[in-house]
Length: 212
Image 1 (tube, one colour):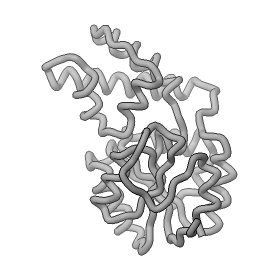
Image 2 (cartoon, rainbow, N blue to C red; image 1 turned 45 degrees about the vertical axis):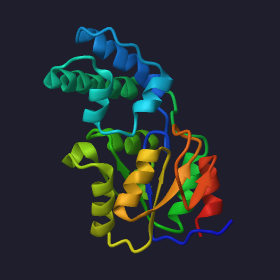
Image 3 (tube, rainbow, N blue to C red; image 1 turned 135 degrees about the vertical axis):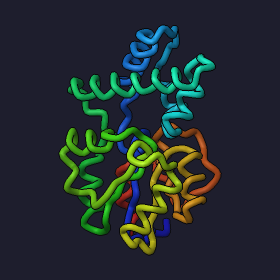
């Protein structure tokens, strides 16, 4: 396998760094019930939704013609999931994450770009104790911009010349194409297939063999 030489690895969150769907499925179901909807969620259903922007997720799964009510419901889902995550003692990170990030950080800088809500990345950094390994991060909830725009903005801000993004779904690959950034497919994550990549990893620990 040809190794990738990069001055910055940009990570996706859900399906790439960790998998919170076992914690979040009950959170979302409870929030919808409190808003008057009988909507069922399980891990597989959430895996099919995560990676989209929060408004797109609301449009896809909240059965109400009133957009304001859909988005208010999803906002409550976010509140409940953050509360439940804070109270959970389960390590939802993929096995080998800490060791892999520590090793990679000695070779290049690490970043995060996600379509998540504000505070979600910070929760991961605090919960994992790995914040010191990341140089910068940004998400949809911080500025309302989609993943392609945020990848492009982070690359420009940090003056990266040869960045690479690792994500798990086709939407991540599409964002990378739009932003002009190479894509590594985290095939262990939520996506079943993508239409192209510069490298594929079936376990996050394999990044050590991919990055120069």
